[in-house]
Image (cartoon, rainbow, N blue to C red; front, top):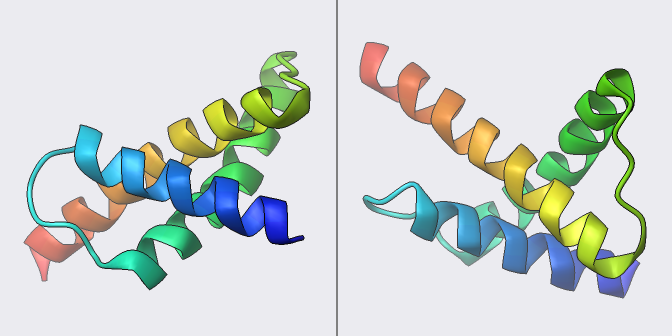
Length: 79
């Protein structure tokens, strides 16, 4: 569990950096990374892609977090 928090936080932070602009802060980055891991894993499973291990989780969480950051910025612009 602690490893998932750490990897999720790193993935969320990396996603915030990759997407440019103002970040959401450490706590939100961790949440986005964790949620990104679940969403990225779900999407990867549906596409038939499975990345195992710690690096695979980090990559999956990163891409899921990027997707979440992109969606959240779209919503924030419209509100």
